[in-house]
Structure formats: C-alpha cells, structure tokens
Length: 299
Image 1 (cartoon, rainbow, N blue to C red):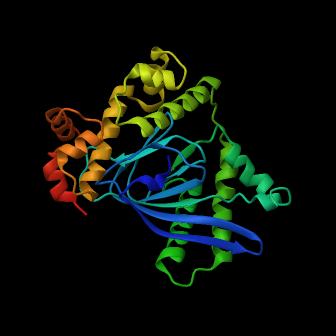
Image 2: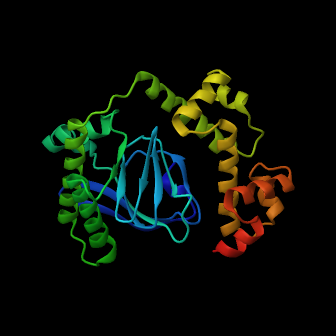
Image 3: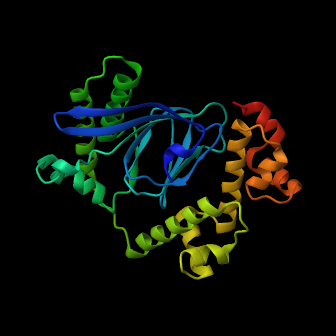
C-alpha cells in the first residue's frame, strides 16, 4: 500500500543521490489534502512531511497529532499511518514529503553510521513516528533540514549530491538519537494487532468491489469477528464496515476527478450496488453530491 497510489499526490521529483558507491533513492511528493485524505497505509522507506498550508490530522498507529502550517511529522518504515485535512477547516491544504531509504546492502557491514544509526532506526519497533513541532529544538532542526533538502533538490537546478546526503544523514542522526533517548513501550498485543490490521487492509485493497463484511475480513486474518472489531477500534478508531465504506467513497472520489465514466458506473465499480445509497453516503462524507464534486475537482 504505497503512498504514490493516490491520484492527488504529485510526484515533484525523484533523484538518486550518489557518493562513491553509495546510492540513496529519494522521492519528493506534494499532496493536496483538500481533495482527498491519505488512507491508512505503510511503506518500506522513511518519510518526513512538512505542512505547507492548512491544518492536518495525522495518525500513526494508535497516536493522533493535530498539526498547523510549518509543523510536520516523521513516519518510520512499516508504520501504519494516515493523514487528512482537519475536518473543521476548509481551503487548500498542502503537505510536502521527502521519502527515502538510506539502507545500502553493499555497505551494511562496513558502515559505522549504518550500524549505529540507520539500522536501529529501521528496526526500532517502539518508534513508529512522531509529530515534528516548531517549538521543540530537534524537531525544528529536522523541519529545517527537510525544507532545505526539498528546496535544493526541487526548487534549485544545481543540486549537490554530497550536500543532500549530508543533510539526510543529519536527519537520520537526530531521529535515531532521540528515538533511543525517548523509547516508547509497545506491547506484544499492539504489535500483533498492527500485523492483523495490515492483513485486513490489504484484503480490502484487493477486494473492495466485492461483498465485504466482518466475517470475511476476520477470516482473511484468521481471527474471530470480535477480534477483528477490536483491532479496528483500537488501531484505527473505526469499525471494519465503516472503514470499507470510507475506502469505497475515497476510490469513487478519485475516479470522479480523473475519469469520464458515468457516475452510476463509478458507484458500481467501487462496490456500491444501490445508486441512491451511494449518493447519500457520498454527500455525507464529502458535503456535496457526486455530480457537484466532479464539477469542482475534475482534472
């Protein structure tokens, strides 16, 4: 469930930083949360985001953060996370992401920096992510470094690989150092619940057009229906059926922006067999009808 699957995420740039035989793939994304939220997902890389405009609500597994312009957040590899515009706000809402993976298989055994900082950060089950606030010194420094990396790599034409790698190394150093200094206790139950949620979310991603219920989802994770309900409530703060409904509405909203299909066909393609129920559910979620949504956001 990669972050680049969303049609409203603009890939601003993708570069391969090189220093001798050391290479780091880095992607830069700009995300417009006014149009659509980023659903629960995870990725193998590290992600640092800056709120460029508006206010956002970020969820990292069981944690929730409310962030304003100039603040940001960090997501560790494999962590369940979601992001949306703060529901009470309106207007344009933009975040900028730097996504990178500083691991290098060829140098893992030789690099002191890798063994001391990169490996512990990636393997740190207790450090899933954190908000980055402008009034916390080390948070503020990471925000500054991420902004500089964005500007030098995207806004400027003379990007310097060595300088960019140095900037990323500083961010990794700060994250790794403070994750070790501020450990969080993660229970075996939370770890197990997160893995079960990943299985059920992957199943929904593949089968959202089908007839889904709690029984089907619990079977996909080989757990009871009550356990499935509990996992969704504890990890995502919602029910399995409500999640499926929101997932289908999100998919429909994406298609309304980029497709010329009839609205009834989009509804069916997203798992809604009753057009009146789709229209009612869509309006409850987005505040406007599917027709008005298409007219407002058609790309």
